Length: 276
Image 1 (tube, helix red, strand yellow):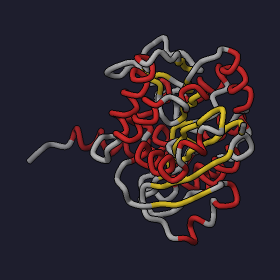
Image 2 (cartoon, rainbow, N blue to C red; image 1 turned 120 degrees about the vertical axis):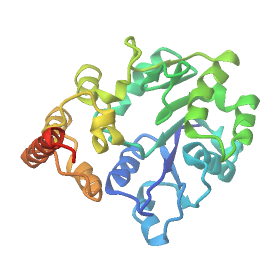
Image 3 (cartoon, rainbow, N blue to C red; image 1 turned 30 degrees about the horizontal axis):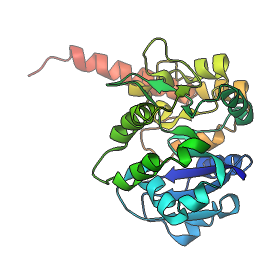
């Protein structure tokens, strides 16, 4: 029996596979067989970027988001293929990484004999494991109710709906799941990437935490790329190259300080400018 299969869900509004996603696929291919599907139509020339690291790559605008892409791959492969593996990993391209050793995390979680697990947990609305990275063990893969779950997936249901639902669904079936990092403060854990890396050897940083830090980051943004690189050795050039396409991105160094300082001054001037 094969050890592990990884289904990687992608999406990019520019119809490209970013370099950080190619790196993600490459690193996952070292510990699993990787299959890729994107919820946006991509040209074959783009898919060629990722093919050296995956068993299969395809795309279509199915509008089912991550769970829709995972469903597509499950339909293409069939359960007869998937159940040859001992573990199924679901992952998407909403994170940068891996930045630390994934193998040690798998070893630690395997020792606990969980039926399913994720890296982080969330208490928003209901308790659930966050779906950017989830692992399901052999008994779940063979479970008929779990297999039926993927037949019920609909494009008009959001990723958030399924992310929140799947944890309670599996728990109700009698399976035991847990999170690699516990969320005792019931907070947005991914808004503290440096803390998670330092204290828990967290392998991923959420894209939107660096893309839109005002809403999604609770740590200083200044020089965060250098701090990530210093703690993990990850090539943060992959992050900056991805974010550079965003017109609002102004870097992480002194240029960001100047940008933020100028913005703050403009806001203060506007507050004191008399309205005519």
